[in-house]
Each structure stands twice: as C-alpha cells, then as structure tokens.
Length: 78
Image (tube, rainbow, N blue to C red; front, side):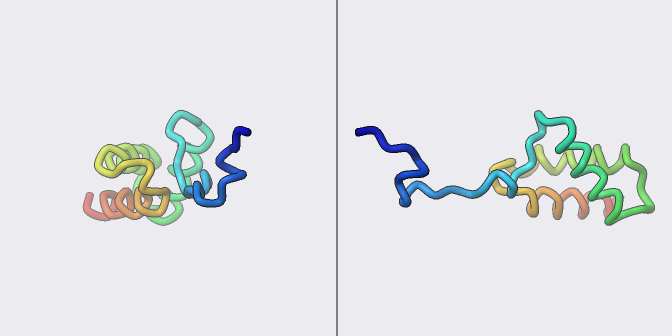
C-alpha cells in the first residue's frame, strides 16, 4: 500500500504560504507591493531590486518572512 505525504504525519513540512514563488508573477508583484507599503519613500523598482537581491542572498525555502526582512533592510540601507 502506497502512502502519500498527507497520510504520513511524520512528513510534515512548511506550508507554501510561507514561501514566495518567484515563478508566479502575481506573487512576486504582491511581495513588491508589500515592500513598497513598508518603505513608501522608495520606488517600486527599488523594492523589486531589493527583493531580487534578498532572494539571491537567502534560500527561498527559508521563507517569506526572512526574505522580506532582508529586502526591507536592503531598501533602508539605500
């Protein structure tokens, strides 16, 4: 009998909502808007650049919060 990850309670991972899918344009745009709201002095392009730079520094699997925190730090430093 085959079991799926959902059937095996030992194989519990992080929910996808904790991640940013950079392949999904709407999700990437949403993250950019969130950054822009947190730092309205910068432009959306600066937010996009900061998010991209943060994603290159941090593994996407480490989660949305960590990437967003790093991107906001990059925005504030510029």
